[in-house]
Structure formats: structure tokens, C-alpha cells
Length: 337
Image (cartoon, rainbow, N blue to C red; front, top):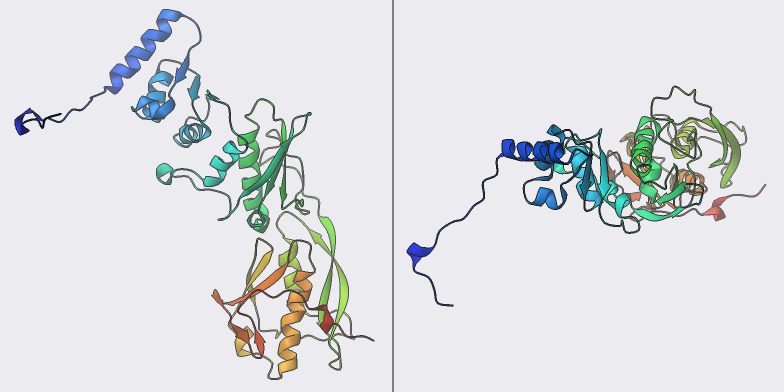
């Protein structure tokens, strides 16, 4: 095709009137005199999904249709929360969940309730309408209101699917033991006023034996609510020292635990500067301090290894103990009577 002279080239554009869109939508609804579904797929056919949706809503439409979950979530984020939104194409396995875990558009003014790195590991729908959703370890770091919000964001979203009535959420195949309910449905909602019932859980805590014969241990029972995680509670109990008189404190009383998070089986502990400032001078005490923590937390079902930080910075060593990589438990340090 020959090149056109420069003066034959011109810019083309399409101008769409919002008022005319709304007028046309009302005209369609008035003409057919039956309920109308406003199709706003493909970003409103280039008009903008929310703009096209607003035109249909102004005409009295109460149901919209889009082509995929991402478009549906974009409409929800734009404020269309009281309408039914239909998907015109089948949803691939996990597609709706993946869209939800990806979070809302950056300019939506909304934020994701899910920890960074949360991934869908699997799902299964039972015949009685219970959808089992298995998420990665990052989700297990949630507690309290953060866990409740994330749980019900998943529940409200997934229970919009016709065949889903209830949702059960696990982390790497395990239930979250301190959650009040394991099967969730929208009727329970976030602020249902249900009184929390503590869950009793047990854990083994490791401390140095009196007289320096390696590590000993004691069993403790804890009452957990949705405000707690087992990792937080057990780590806090370690800092408080042993109850058994045959065991001794090794973590200095000045040490504070700022946070304990769980990512893919690695428990990341962030301590105050006093962990370094008040470090025991003897190499064997340094080893016992580190492994009293590692053996205790690594003995929990959800923890494979432990990574140490101070004031948010990773530790490469603690005296004679190398900490450049997450440490797995060493139960060979447990002494014999």
C-alpha cells in the first residue's frame, strides 16, 4: 500500500455522551417492558465498565453482566454493591479466588485483606454446598479482626456462586484452631455479636536445664481466641520463662518480641535490640537460647523452621550460632535425666 501524503492523515476519535448512554438505556427498558440485564463486559465495550453500568442503573436495571470475575470485582470496587452481577462465561477452576487474592485495582480506594504472598493451593466443592478452600501459609499469620475480615471477604465473594452455601478455609491443609467457626456463611457476618469461646491448645516449651545439661521441656496449656495465634502465645510464654524449677530462663528479661509471622512454614521472629545487647557471653548459653526458641516453635504443627530478626533486620549470627538461613529444630540438644 503506497504511503499517503501527510495532509491525508488525520486523528480519529469517538465521543460518547454519558447522558445519551443513560437515555438509550431508559429507552430500551421502556420499550421491552420486561426486566433487562445490562451487559457491560469488555470494560463496557470500551466505554468503561463503571460508566456503562451507571447508565443502566439510572434506567432502573438491577442486574448487570460481565465476562469474567475481574470485571465483576472492578464493578464491586466502583460501588455497585447492591446489584446482581452475572458472569457470561464459565469460571475456570479457582479463577474467582485468584482474582480476589490479587486484590482490588490500585485506584479503587480499597485494600486487600490478605497477607502478601497468599496463594490458592486447592479447592473442592461438596454436594451439600460446602466449598473447601486451602490457602498458603501466609494466610495463617492473620489474627483477630484481620482474620475475620479476610475470612468474610472470601465467604461473601464465594457464596455469590449459586452452588456455594458455606465456606471452610484451611492453611496448607490445616484448620486455624483459634477460629470460632470452621464453616462460614454470609448470615453469620462479621459483626454477628456471637460471644467468643476460647479454644484450649497444648504446646511443649524448651528451656535450659538447671546445671547446664542441655535443654529440658515442660508442657503448657493455653486458651486461644481469635485475637491470638499459637505462635504468638507460645513465643510470649518462652520470654516469660519456665514454670518448672528444674529449668532456667535463658532469654534476658529485657528482650521484647515485636512480631511473629509465618510464611510457607518459616516462622519469622523480630526481636528488640536487647537480644543482642544482653547476649549471654558463653557460647553454650548462646546455643541454648537459640534452640530453646527454635525447638519450641519448630515443634508446632505449622512451623518447619525459624528465622531471627532484630529491629526488622535479619541476623547472620548470634554469637557462635550461625543464623544466615532458617534453623530447623535440633532435639539432640535435649538432655537426659
